[in-house]
Image 1 (cartoon, rainbow, N blue to C red):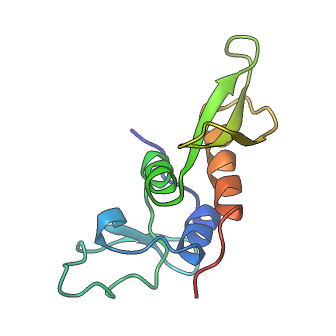
Image 2 (cartoon, one colour):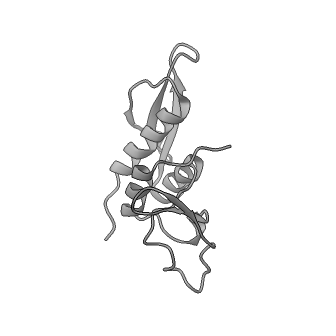
Length: 125
């Protein structure tokens, strides 16, 4: 099963403009960090549930960053499987933006990379 992004990452993604039916998983975070399920937003009602940060998977957030912001987040390993670090790069040019520290758990490294990629974006009002 794919890992859901953490509440802090979901809140950051919302602040950076992640809203709308294309990215809605049917799960969102309440302000206390608890997850609740809801119906998927219909095209005729695009504002419904968008004030909550979406509880989406890491791969969905990575896809949004690639498709909407031209930022690719991927992991590389250190010494086989002894650790992972994230790499941020621009999709169109392949130019590297940033690399991160080493983490022992794949999903932790990916989460940190996704969060750092969000930090590169401007807030949406």
